[in-house]
Amino acid sequence: MNRRRMSRIAHTDHPIAAPLDDSTVRRLLDRALRRGDERVLDLGCGEAPWLLRALDGHPGVTAEGVDLDTEALGKAAREAAALGVGDRLSLHERDAGDFTSPHSFDVVLSVGAAHAFGGLLPTLAAARAHLAPGGTVLIGDGFWEREPAPDIVEMLGEYEDLPSTVDRIVADGWTPVLGHVSTVREWDDYEWSWTGSLAEWALDHPDDPDSGAALEAAAVHRAEWLHGYRGTLGFVTLLLRRTTS
Image 1: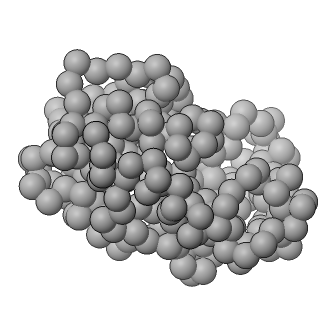
Image 2: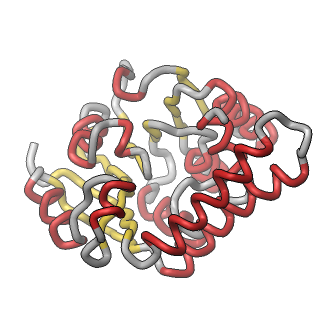
C-alpha cells in the first residue's frame, strides 16, 4: 500500500499528524500568532491542518505550505476554500528542503517531519533559512521518555532524552519560549485513532486492492505501539526564537 495513501487514511479522524490534542494545537498557535497578521510557512505540510487552523482562527494571517504529496495538497486547497480562507493560503508541490521564497516568514512550522530533513538540527537549519528577524519556529519531534530496548531503537531510529534534546537545541542558538510534552492521553488518542481509522477503512472497503495491506499495517502498528514504544517514546513541541544571529 502506498505510504502516502496509508497516512492520509490513518489521519482521517486525527488530522494533526502528531500526538497533540486540539486544545494544545490551539494554545501553541495562539502563542505563535500573537500579532494576528503573521506570515506562516509549514515545511512538510501534508493536508495543512496546522495552517488551516491558523488561518481559520486568525483572520489577518497568511500562510504557505510545502509538500510533495499532490493529493494531500489538493485536499488542503479544497478545505481552505470550504473554510473561506483559500485566498490567504498558497501551496507549493515540491521538496521542502529545496523550497525557496522571495520573502521571509514570521512563523515557520515543522511538526513531526524531522525525518524528512535528516534530523532535528537539520530541520531547524531549514526553518531558519526562511525565518524573519525576531520570528518564531514551531517544531515537534520525538525523545526517549526512558531508556529504549535495542529493538525499539532499531524500529524508530535514534533519539535522546528530553534534557539532551533541549540542550542540543539551545546549543544551536535557539531559546525555547514555550514547550509542550505530549501526555499519555494524547499519545493514546493519537495511536488509537491512527490504527483505528486505517482498520475501519479496510473493513469498510473489503474489495479495495489495498484493504488487506491496510488491515495488516494497522495490526502491526498497534502491536508495535502497545508492546513496544508506549511509554518509551515521547514527543515534545517547542516554540523557539533565535538566541544568536
